[in-house]
Image (cartoon, rainbow, N blue to C red; front, top):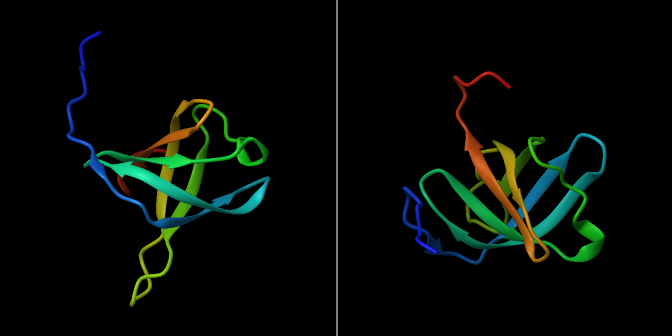
Length: 92
């Protein structure tokens, strides 16, 4: 199987708060990040995100408050989900 990814993934382990419009706040850990998105590890109890959903995300534990970003669920797997960064100028 060839890797057709356009962006290089960089391993990154940080806490990420995800705010879901129905399920509320979830604290998860990232596995890696790229220019266009982030992969987060989620246990079975938290795997309630569906393809195409938009959520808000904010990195936790930084010395300054991180920006709140809109993320789209683009991949759902047993270990976690892939989230794509949604730019401000994109329609939701």
